[in-house]
Length: 310
Image (tube, rainbow, N blue to C red; front, side, top):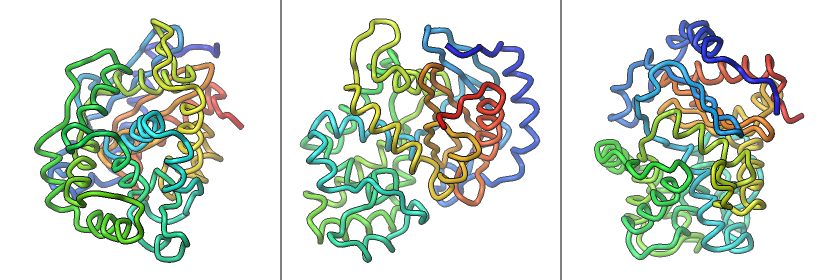
């Protein structure tokens, strides 16, 4: 195992990146997210031996948003298998914004290029087993409860409602996908499940534990139980490297070089084999939709402790 940080160093580093909180903007296109405070910062590292260190407002909960795409992909793979999932969603990065419809119109067959863009994530959410949206979300929550060993985790009804009411572009993506038989069933029900999925709330300690589970090849750190099949955990981490930071994924791979996924609420999830899980929360975003503080802090960690996989 690589050398560990101390809690004191982590607190010092968080203070060093705090000034960057005002270099970005809190997401305001989802009204409920516009209420976030740019100075509500937190970081957690969950090592593979089960030790967890953290700094900042670690008890503050935030919504997963696009970080949920990684977890939903793992569950969809468990539910349906690799051939089914990738028969409907591709494996290639796009270089386009996460909400783009452009590539769908260019690609034949018209399936999303990967599961980390919105079109792909909507298709993946549609694949999760369940008759109703609440059943699908309930299964996803149970999966997260299993990964975190915390059954209190739920979703924010306020954020879910806010997203559902303003999700005009995602509705357009779903109708396009339905036209080309990538998704089945009701567009509104799929969107309901997806917005609730994105609105699942947790804190950085929960998120770093999920990152550690992926780093541990899908095994629970304490019981050794295989929660995610090893091959599926590897698939998810590969997508985190190639597509996890929106259309900044290439630059992030060069500068930081670890599997990571961001969300527009300001969360960033990192997973490093032989090290553990990293989670940062800083709601101010750059122009690509990534946490400004999150990127700075994870880059510092990667460079100082040689975490790059390359």
